[in-house]
Length: 80
Ligand SMILES: [Zn+2]
Image 1: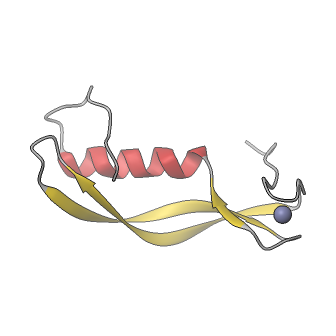
Image 2: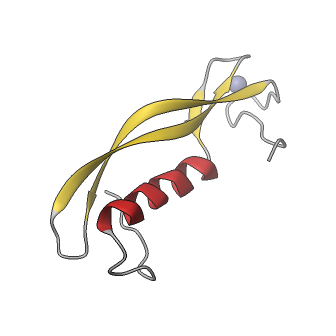
């Protein structure tokens, strides 16, 4: 998806990069845990804004599902 643009200034001069992040989530049983993951974020060269797009949401959900395991593949991830 290269049709991304900056939500702040509208510039299309944006780059995507990976940052290390830590996700805090709770499994279906209510037990909270943390997951280290690589998160794709967008960076605007015009105004220096940094934001997360749908790719980041997908990456977080994938990391969550991977951490929780295969016990409830149809359950929607609840990221806190
Ligand atoms: Zn911008």
